Length: 405
Image (spheres, rainbow, N blue to C red):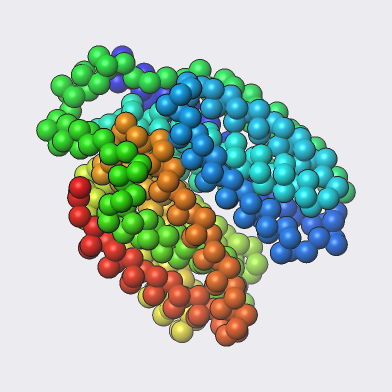
């Protein structure tokens, strides 16, 4: 029964993250807004998502810090209220500033708080499956934007202002889901941990890893932290650079391919992103950190080379394979973040340490901007692919340089 209970908590965590991941559907949510406010530039609207990502990281950090002082349920309650207020304010926006505040600041912070709450709570329930549970949870977070984005497209009322109704509904639904889900955010009892340790095949290994309790200050002084942080930036930026240019690359390689097929092929990156989180998370548990990171980097490298060949020979099949493997590798970075934090620095300070490592997303988010600038300067998508190749090669140096504490 004890083992069954923790999977119930995990299912609730997946549901919460599925809805909290809605903020990543910005590229879909913004479409009707651009139709209503034709005088708002794409650059100013894109800044909404940038603000959202920054506040997501900061929300996770704040959530990690206060978890030592308040119950994690309170974090989830605050997140629920911020989502409700944020989407309500955004739905009333008549100026871009109001959209920044509602969607960017409030909803972004809410997502970060709930994200940290789920990940830190579930890591305590699954000390024996850190990589796998991280992958499962993060798959929910990743596909949330895809699923809810489709619902938004299908049911948002047509015409000026229809998106406002959808935003208000989103705020209410998120509030209810998080409020109900918060009652499942409990820490495992000491007897459960003892029970788990007695029944795990990797008892000695688990005890050794869980004996590490390195606080944030000492963590950021370690070379292993900075090498991993740079590794995560390089590979996340690589994934974001591809996503930002994927449609253009696919269109140039696939001459004569329909727009709907192009959209489906580009969508494979998001689908495989979710699958990659589970695959590489489980791999972390089975073969360890070093082999998992090396496998991820080598696969990413080969997939990028495949894309370059696809671009050169205009081979659409190669392109599809490249998108599939790149998407899976990009997803693998996120689940590795969580497993690496727990394995290298322990569970006691996990909420703060994990949120610090996730700050790599702020720097990595500029990957798409750099890719766009390179295309503007060169007029070729090959510049993006060679940028990706360079970043992956640098990440390999980081990978082999990381030493266990």
